[in-house]
Amino acid sequence: MPSISSTIHVPHFHNSSSSKWPRIAVSLPMTTDSDFLIPKKKKEVSVQLSTLKPPVSRLETVRFCNFNLGRFQPSPQELEPHDSFEFGDFVAREALLDEEYWIAAWLRAENEWKDRRERYHTDKEFAHYRKKIYARKEFAKIKKRCKEPQHGQSSTCIITEKKQQKDIKRIVLRSVVGTLDLNIRYLLQGETFPGELVDAPRFCKIDRTPTSRYGYIENLCVAKSYRRKAIASNMLSFTVEYAKSRGVERLYVHVDTNNDPAVALYQKLGFEVVENPLLIKSPYDLLRLQM
Image 1 (cartoon, rainbow, N blue to C red):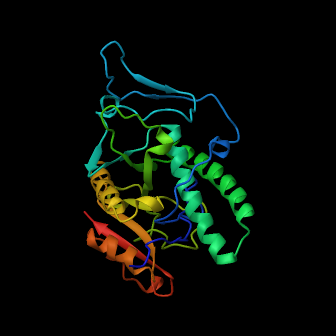
Image 2 (cartoon, rainbow, N blue to C red; image 1 turned 135 degrees about the vertical axis):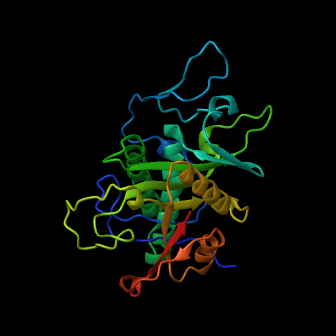
């Protein structure tokens, strides 16, 4: 069966909080090396997750302080108020910790540079170096998108992690096996689908009516050693319900037209290819799920 792995480039959506080239991929050897897993600029970070339910009553909130490569997975009690979806030996949920953002960035870097190395026959050592740089930049982007919503538009990093087992403790960096981004946005005035106005002015007005609100999925990655375990499809199913619970009625995703397994994956979940003359020459299919 052909791989679902791909890298997708789509039009810029005139959203300062999004990257210029959104990507969608399913990928990737999951290897880690602690010397480069540490972000280049190490800062003291304190993130309060005020909605978490504490495991014991003496704490009103749970505070995860400082980036820590050895941090263990949050307990089910800590995560209880947050949406999650269990399937088999895995759990899909929203990423909450910097360490989870970091391993999500690393998975994407592995996929990106695996594709580039194969395409351009890049030297292995050079590719490894560039992969580290890519991961650090992607980590910063994920944090900014997820923690600093702009203009009423938001981004959520969804992860799939190994289900916790009794008497077995895992660190975050060894537990996350899949990730994707869910961006909730508004169409620009005059648009009927994302990216339609590719030549729109930079400061084109955003239509903030409920009917113009939509979700956009990108950066889907699954670790190579965990493929063929229905992780991608279950993570997407969770994302659909997550978006629906937040009032989103339409979801979009770009997929390489020639990547039949990826197109089939989304169609199985109810996505349909958007038919529009403007998209005929595009090497990517725009798929939509009307909920």
